[in-house]
Image 1: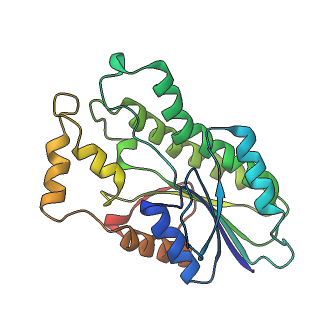
Image 2: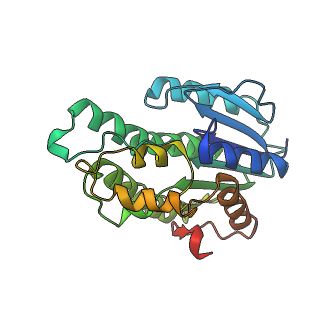
Amino acid sequence: MPKTLIITGGSRGLGLGIAKRFHKKGFRVFSIARTQLKKCYEIEQIQCDISDPTALKTAFDSIFSNINPQTTESIILINNAGMLGDVDTIGNISLENIQQTIHVNLTAPMQTSALFIKQTEHWKCRKNIINISSGAAHNAYGSWSMYCASKAGLDMMAKVISKEQKKREYPIKIANIYPGVVDTDMQAEVRATPPEKFKSSQRFIEFHLKGELLAPDDVAKIIYKLYKKKKLNGGKAIDVRKV
């Protein structure tokens, strides 16, 4: 297959929408996720807890053993998997939950990016890393310390990798996507948070009541369009609502 997509968290929500969109456009799609979908024939699913670095490396080794660099025209890594973590002021959150949330949202994308870069360093094809970030990277929400901090870290990671890759013979293009408020399980989780723990919960409830949530497939279409037009580069952050 000349075009390949590797995506984390491709079994539901926005990740599933992206996986299906790229498959429809001719990509062979590998999803690395904790859960697997039955009868989802478009996606090759690797069940893996991305917070386990050993399991993550095994998953990447398995994927790349099935890809021929000589015939590959394009290969993409999309770091999509993420979690909100416990929503509360940080003094009320367990150390274990802080560690888990930061690992899934920031450490794992750094690890997947490192594995992807190492595997494809000498590949001459088109190469992209796309991170699903959030406007929370630069907007501070009370009770979202881990989510905001990890997304801010993801944005800086993209800038650093972009700077590093400029010096490479066969550079990887990288960019971050702000998908807006998407109709996913995470949004349902936000709306269900008691206002005493998250003062902005009513705002997200209003998004839902007014029908202002974006459909995963619509966001996936925009991401593919940006990829197709070669806009995903320079370590920049792109808000799909402004495209």
